[in-house]
Image (cartoon, rainbow, N blue to C red; front, side):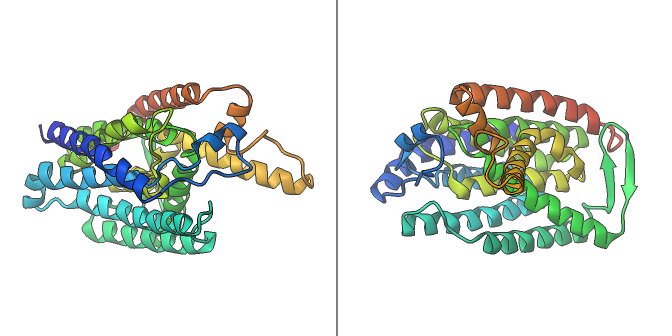
Length: 328
């Protein structure tokens, strides 16, 4: 049971890494800068160590090398490809976090810089999957059991849009203690179940490692958080979420399992558009949605439980929707 080993290794290393990394981040004064226009009570989190995503990224790397060694000997490297794809996004996030810490501000790389770097990573990954024979231009529509055949150029453009959008949606969800972590754990378990159903041992190892690493990180990230994952962690998670979907050739499952991510980013888009259209009026009390609900009286713990619970239910439904993608 390599996936069990992968989960245990990732959990253990991430849990131990937290004991080492958090004090180091404190000594380096790698504290989070809190937005002044956010909820006022969030200012108490000022200075909480960030870039904690390094602990689960490292743990996942060790887990897939150890537990996935047999798959690599058999020539199955797809789990490594997905990890490296996500790692590129994590590196972009690391640079962004470093810039924020260096300038003691809440702004790092510019939006255009992040977009271009993310777009390049998305295109490179799509081309790699195509060359490896894991990807087809046929979009499988969950629940309907039909495929929409697209020209490769159209598929590549759509794939890049989905990847960049997903990565930034996950990043936006990381706004309160444990939220992005709690929402992504059911997604990782969904990928584990689908990988097992499709007989993809390599991706089982990766998804189990993701679940294990995040479960350990939640020990430190649950409210009140002792550490934040930072853009280093959230962009990496975004890469994992979309990378796994494309590696399994079911990208249209993302809006289902990632419903919370989608709602979060849509609330932000609606807020900005409405603000410009009405010359200063707000549709939500504050965007993204989790801040609106906070200002409506929801606690961070309630948000964590509800959003994670909704994601878990949708992941179960999504599994039903894609279980006939390939004959078993």
